[in-house]
Length: 435
Image 1: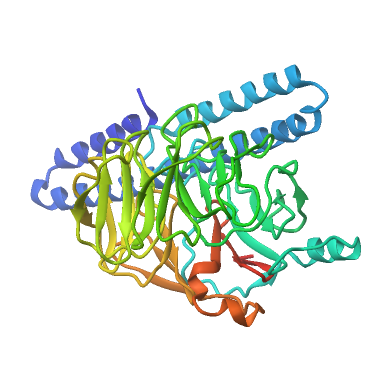
Image 2 (image 1 turned 180 degrees about the horizontal axis):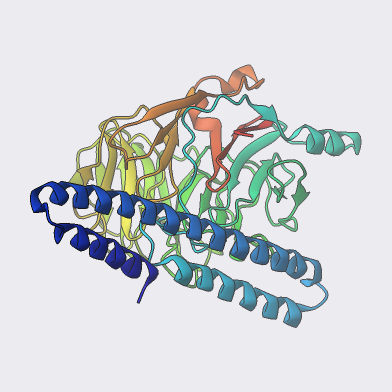
């Protein structure tokens, strides 16, 4: 019998004992109070159990990942065997907590509920100065506009991935204290937007849609990388069919192209333009043939034939740029609030209150969400029904020619388990908030 069922059965028996007491009317209310308190205590116990399981599994996975990364180039067979163990641990963690309520929506590691961020008063701390200073002291040239250009966090491990202009992807396993380059020179250029780094919601798989340099992805937590074939200067942002075990299907907006949408069915090796409209400003994938495109405040378009034909399906004014799919439900941000579809984009509905956000959403679970614009970061702990303004952005010392639309260039990473936020603006340092 699952632990939750056993504990709640005990609570019910306790309540029944009260009901059989002499003063039936008085004890009915007492029994309900006892049952309610027991249920709350049980829920807290379950979440505590989940957190402990997650911590153990996360430590095991991180230790194995370090060994894997160390031997990957010298012992391919050994590295493959270690990666198989990592996959088993992730599955074990997921099985260990599947009986618990409010488990993270899509996180393989099965972590407990993320800490609520609202109410904290931490300031922003520069975490990229060390890396940038070291590169500059070595005479390394950082392409326009310099410094960092993108940051994100692996939803499963909490590891931080930071893009440095023309110097690839750098990873931190200690919450931004130190960084090492991990892309093996498969990634170049910069992230043009805060939606250019696209994580599998379950973690471990990341696609980087870069501008003025090589784009690419990792499917094993940063251990190995592959490059995409080039199209012009590159991409503003892109979507991935993360539902597939073997990731091959991508969908992206070509930079300054008048709204050219491109598809790849071979993991980015080659690209085909499937549609063009100057209003296209958002993309999404439910599967290899079902695509979503947002049209600059003019609603949502849908294709079920891999982009050959398109039909309007909703009139919501979409404000973000890449749809997030969590447990089969697609989410976009509109002027009316979060909008969601549970039928692969055929119909859409508003989930909660309006939020002035242009990037995100990032999910910890179905209720805990973070989104942002060029001035502030917002948090919801009730699935978008209400939103709290968490904090303003760092005082990015960026170039004046990048001030036309700050929200376009700002990316946010969220370490769900530690309650830490990270921020990068193209051409500026990267920062940490929450510790």
